[in-house]
Length: 135
Image (cartoon, rainbow, N blue to C red; front, top):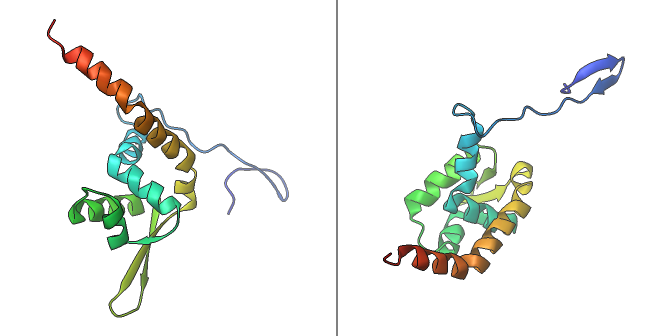
């Protein structure tokens, strides 16, 4: 079934997807912003944007993430439709993670955000020092 309005036999006018309002307290957009704005989620998605990876490969590449946090974040990303989990019936079982087409739409924005943070940290640190100076 196609989303849209039937305007003539065989022709469907596409409807725009529902748009949230992140400024509204009860808008679920805020939950999604929390998910993609979380440091672990952004790093996981960026790594998976280069291709599928196994759990331990992700853990090795993301310095400082605990096994529990990686597991929780992957489950949340899977629930949100941003990551797929594939289990291969091998001995031992092999599990790989990959991003979905929905997550692929995010990649450019996430890369820009990470690039900005990496290249502007000096300016932010200087601003913090100025702010923290006794007045």
